[in-house]
Image (cartoon, rainbow, N blue to C red; front, side, top):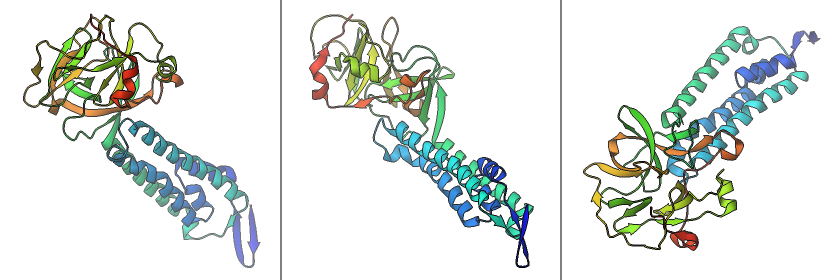
Length: 316
């Protein structure tokens, strides 16, 4: 429909079309309604959280990168949806006079610029983080086959003990947990890990804590604390309370670190890998097959004295 105001013939905007335009190209619906400034603001607000993602691994505390990335992604999606809703209601009360800014070439130019900026922002985010689909049972109970995992590509030197890493070996990528720092002497004794002559602190989860991790308590479920990082392990039970390890141990070798699997039953779960083979840090599980097993951090930071209440030893 058209209406004449003075000598200027204005065209009424179509709300559904405005909403659809902003759905495909953020802000284009506002541009269609003659609100160029509003369109640019919506576009920048949508791209800003995405551009911030590469800086999160450097600023977020350990184990919280996944949640920070999720907040940024949710903020970007909220602006995207809000742009479409705003365009719909804006079009219901707007009519626009013909002009260069409301011509088809102007719409196409805005759509092209939006597409270029969006692809650039996503490429920047993708250069810092990627998705990884886990396979196998080596990292149970925390990780299961088919879990979709967020991996940070930035690896500045050897990752700290207790963190999860992706490394390349034998022509494929695998996930393991860093067991010790370069130069440390480490060994395995049954299902227990010893570093520099000390067994790692091992304990039993309470029911509420295991449920928060999407885990069911079982005789094989324990937690381990390494360098202040607490995480679940699957291990065989034994008896005795020992803190000192008196058996043989060794260093990982030049340019290598020891890593361990979280699943320590009936397998070789302890080995050394080259630091240069580590391709990323695991920031957490995005989707683990259910809402209960989604948004899981790779570890929980804790003080050894806080975890010592339920300490046990697992020796097979």
